[in-house]
Length: 159
Image 1 (cartoon, rainbow, N blue to C red):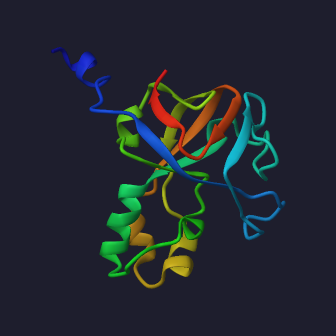
Image 2: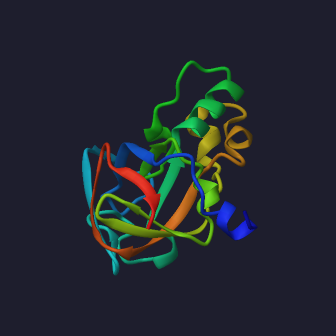
C-alpha cells in the first residue's frame, strides 16, 4: 500500500460518547451537556458561544482514550469531560490521523483544522500538572463542511 492509502485506512469507525456546548458569552460560563447538537457551515454549533466567530474552530473533539491517558498521568480514577472544555468526546478512532481529511459524524461533515492545545484552565480544572498532562492529548479543532445533527452514538468515519 502507498502512504496516501495507508493514511486513509482505519481499522473501524469511531463513536460519539459525549456532547457539550457553552451557550453564554463568557468562556467561564455554564456548559450544557446534551445528547444532540445542530451544526451549520456558517455558525458551527447552534447556540454555542463561538457561534460564527472563528470558522477554523467551530467544533472541538477529543478522544476518550486520551482522557483515560490524562487520568493515568494525573493518577486519577476518572476525569469528567466537562472539565476539558471540548464539544465532543469520541472513542475508537485516532483523531490525529484525520489531519487534512474530511470526515463525517452523523449528518455532519467536518474537516480538521488544527490541534486543540491545552490552556491554563487545565491546571485549574485538573489540578497540579493538569496542563502538562493534557499536552499532546487535547484533541482537534474542526470546521463544518456540511451541517446537520450529531447525536450520542453516531459513527465517526471518513466522508
